[in-house]
Image (cartoon, rainbow, N blue to C red; front, top):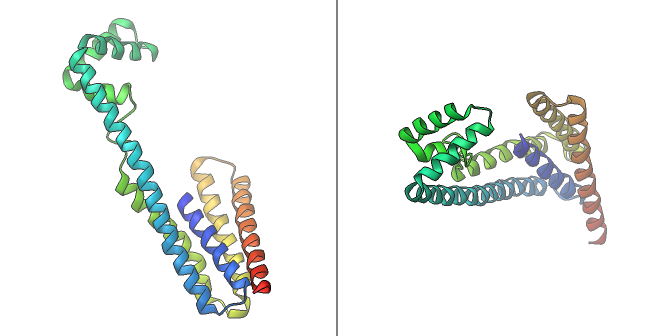
Length: 211
């Protein structure tokens, strides 16, 4: 949802800014497509680097934990027991649970309960990069579609209005899915989207006048 919002705001703002400079509609479309590709690649690269760093940290933590289990097995068992005690489990039962989990897979038990690493939450850089690029591209495609459908003379207002509607819909869906206040979330995303488009439109006008 956040990637799609970014795609709408950045691409719509770029389109409105270029359109405000009173260039040909084909040039606006080319700029929008370039913005979509550049934005998607930027999102993918940024997400890949970020999640790769997280993955490196997880691997280092697991390697350290593996060494500690090999060199200080009893101390690690005490540590796991204490984790369960702090969560409200009786001391004797916590010890029994820790022993059974250690016998089954000590590293998995410590990874999950001490480090917070599990198969479901493990960092996946490639998947994260592709997801970010795809969500951004879907959002960016919406204002681009408006460029294709809009008459040249009304391109900027149509793209701006349609993009605000798209942002409102995504904001409402995201708020409802997350249990947040729908009206407040929708108004917030529309405000920042409108501000971004207004600023780029102003810059486009200014640059056009100077040139």
